[in-house]
Length: 122
Image 1: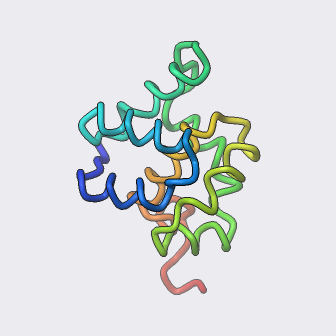
Image 2: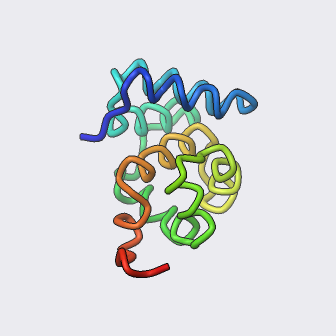
């Protein structure tokens, strides 16, 4: 399970202060004691009023093409989530809060690892 510490949640709150739906996502992550694996389905249910019909892996796969663009990977590598949340939501057709949690999840996993980019690649 991938988790966020209270300090990391606080850092993301500062970074995402202009996106109310992203802050709601951080509240849900906090509610799940930092467990992103638990927060994503909770967010999907809250944002769509439906049970999450896709697994976490399915949602990540839906986002892979967008996330694996070099510019997006660079933002994630730098810990910058704010510039990619809204474009990810639009690109993958998912709610903003869910996009926030998935962006943070890929940041924690490591974008290079998620996208299977060798370390020697630039």
